Length: 323
Image (cartoon, helix red, strand yellow):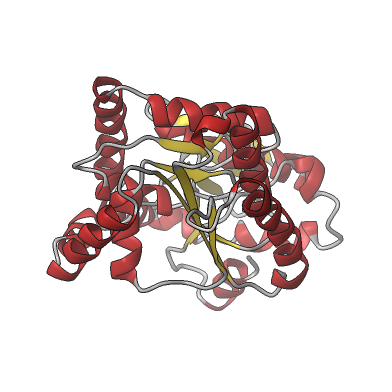
């Protein structure tokens, strides 16, 4: 965050764009940092500041006004150097690239394998880093609540959770595995394991096949950026149109709110109800929701993100960079 100002000091007339690919917190949180002023001044060395959602943009503008005392404008902030544009730019992925990999014969073979392995069963899928903000434990607690309230699903539902290793994984792994073991002990049999927990990543072809076979994907982050895993899931669901259960605190939720089943990740019963709603959803509603999600994925692609951001940086008037 210090880099834009450092570049400005070396290259006063350069056109500089800065994009923050993680959530920007509210001013009540950010102003607790002892280096808050330096970080904000560093970012405002840019001509264009990009954030992922309108909420993150609002947080940044309000924080800069409160901490630095700068004035706001309809399109950004007024600093001593001049106007700094602040905008929202929804990150995406390359749909054509994902579809090309999805069309690979090895993915099709893996889908057939999963169909045979989990024939007659509902398959829930999750893939998250095992850190404090991804809500893996909250997700598992929601699934446990679902099984407690709907025991008829206990023998015909499997949750496959892929947990990617992080520096924080030791403590969180213990917490998550406590729930996994409790679920499997209570609802599992010698023939059926309700939770399959992978504490490692899997090859991309297997990942795409898993997304394609899923009857629902569950994302319960406590705070997250755009979460492109949800985009990959939508692209892989062109045949099944299975529902997406998505935390309200994920950056993607604003665009996906009409198609995804939104949940508060701290509300265990709401997660349980969303799982039940997803598994019992009719084909017509599934298709309608998937069409909305798919359109958003195509619209908010990596190409559109880069094009819009670079265009705004290029459009900066030269006289402003000299101020």
